[in-house]
Length: 94
Image (cartoon, rainbow, N blue to C red):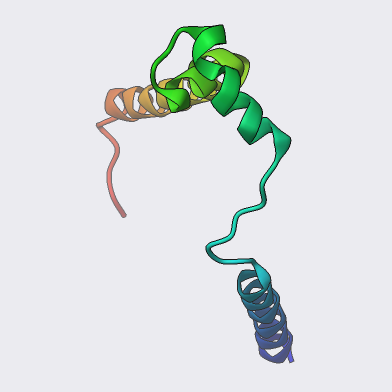
């Protein structure tokens, strides 16, 4: 019974994801007013020649800072775990 429920759940999830992927428009992105604004005013407001750089580091700087903090925290956590594992090297495998 559990395997039937698991298979049913898997099929429903796969069908939902497939439907979502198929229903997305391909090759015609939705235009927004923000795109035009960034292209028209990006260089004069930020001084950057690259529009992607100006968006990432000037218009979306807080998001970039948050992502950097999350990445730093993840690396720090993994390094602490490895350091703890190294100190306890005298354990035996079963």
